[in-house]
Length: 348
Ligand SMILES: *[C@@H]1O[C@H](CO)[C@@H](O)[C@H](O)[C@H]1NC(C)=O
Ligand SMILES: *[C@@H]1O[C@H](CO)[C@@H](O)[C@H](O)[C@H]1NC(C)=O
Image 1: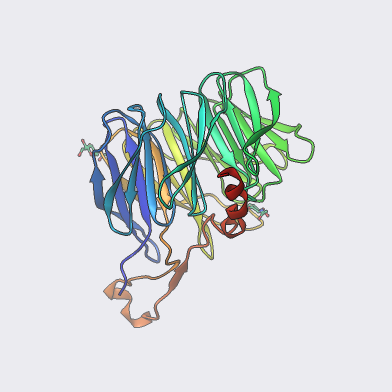
Image 2: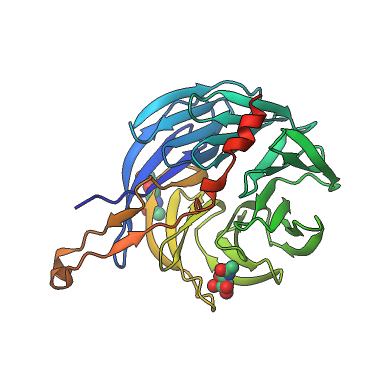
């Protein structure tokens, strides 16, 4: 039977990238050590995964590439002059990177050329997010601005003075809204009006967040709890203790039946949580966990191109051995309409 195909990749203060292979089961999931890389010479600050590649950014100012198909290190992107602060794939064709040098770069994943290097902020770029259509990107930086980029022509479309330094910006999966994080506060914006429709405050500084669907946002910060926010109502709808210490990173993916939230903490653990996003939100249940014994800084779920997999059943359940399939619907469903024409323009 096919082995489980899902992977978890985490970066650490100790310069190491750790990869785990997830084995999914009816009740319990396990994460087995798959690889470690030690290509960086400083702590890891960002990680992202496409179907084919995992990329990591570091304080050492480089972006390292790993080919997950060939299972090899695939070189480095040496363009930035400062800590890499954010990395985001757009589908399988493009990567965007941001760094403390104030640059936002658009890379083609084909030959890993830099298609565009934009001086995006006067200070550091702290976070960026590409709209699901591939036409717009948002960025925030230490110059107290929120900037909208037209990816069709690579130009600045809009600059909003937000009076404080934001450190996270993120589009919702449908692209009708976005959130901007300043310390412990999440401002929810509507695309149409570019105005704040709600604000929600976390007890501690926010380290990471992820939209689980278009209205539920998972928020982690400098405490051991993860909170789920309904962004339509700007209300917390769930809170649970996920770790022993600060949660540093969250990611998620969707199966046919439920959402899996993955959390990584300073306590060294990566945990997988099952959340049913039905009409009524249920409390998350722990699917599995692994002690990486590293001080984790960032996390990404790697979902390879084969979207279907067959679960292995424990022998004791052999009487009901009809293989169940797990279909990862992922967050990539919008990625096929994207910016091939768009970035050809950028490339001129
Ligand atoms: C997201 O999940 C919530 C909570 O389970 C649910 O009530 C809501 O309808 C879902 N929203 C969308 C857009 O699917
Ligand atoms: C995790 O692993 C580390 C190193 O192997 C160990 O020192 C630590 O006690 C473990 N943590 C738990 C909670 O088991």
